[in-house]
Image (cartoon, rainbow, N blue to C red; front, side):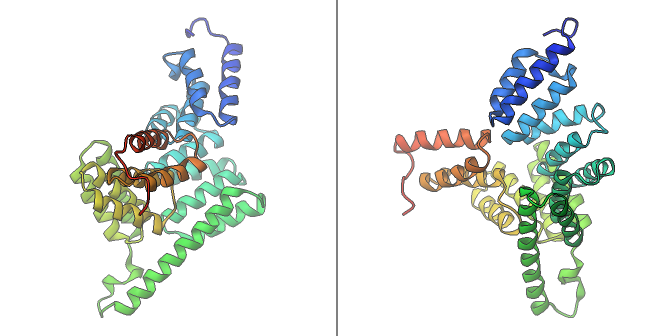
Amino acid sequence: MSSQSVSAEQIKALHAKAESYLVAGNAQAAIDELDRASEDLSAYPTLWRLKGVAKLIQGNNTEAKLIFEQLEGSFGDNPEFLNHFGVVLRRESDFIKAKEVYERGLELSSNEPALLSNYGNLLIDLGDFQKADDVLQKAIKIAPNHKDARQNLVRLEKVKGSSQRNKNESDISKTSSSKDSFQNYDKEAAADWLKLASTAQKEKNYQEALLFAQKAIRAQPDFSAACKLAGEILICLGKKSEAERLLLYGILLGEDDPSTITNLGALAAGRGEGQLALILLDRVLGIHPENQAAKNNMETVRRNLSDGKLVSSLF
């Protein structure tokens, strides 16, 4: 499909076909269809955006982010685009930019439940619990059966409960110096350190990334995203037991996101615990059947189990 000969009708037809695959839950088929049409989809913004959404559904967040960043100028005033872009940025731990993107979207469409739900979820990450509650309650009021908004409210209560327990423990053990108290968590600094850690990770400066992630956790010890990122970095550094501990902290303090559970499954497989790895990976695929990393790991684990390289029992 060359840019000189393609017609608007052809683009519309291809978009409809790829979108039908996405609706059917087959993101890879949508990507295959788009890739067959052109080697340079970036010349067709509507198709390029659709591929970004497909990558997002698969859990290929870095690729999705690159696509959405290239498209930002083309769809900067589109609330649906901004909603997807915000999801990508949050998954890539760029919380500051995600907040800006969601707020831009809500300026254009202040009563869009999906935007409100995702913005509320981000506010939980940032520790702004009251505002998160207000935003999520607004989403529920507009759309009472909005599944994601209700799940995010459950997550909010879970995280608030964890934070309150941390506060109570801090109140019991604190000394006369107030600098160690829970109230002095520097959430803004934590978000800044996390952004630096994420950038360093992408540049494969893992020691520097770990240092920044540690600073984020020190600034805000209940920062689940920082714990998860630190766990990912530790995997890259070969420190698997430490990585597992941080990933588990991240889940306990935050949410059971697919990337973290997939990493825990891979770590379990690396220890030879095939059955546990299968359970974790199956949990990811039950919620996100198009998650490519979980699919690949599942195939590897099953192959190694059949070859006798992994144990098939938890005990």
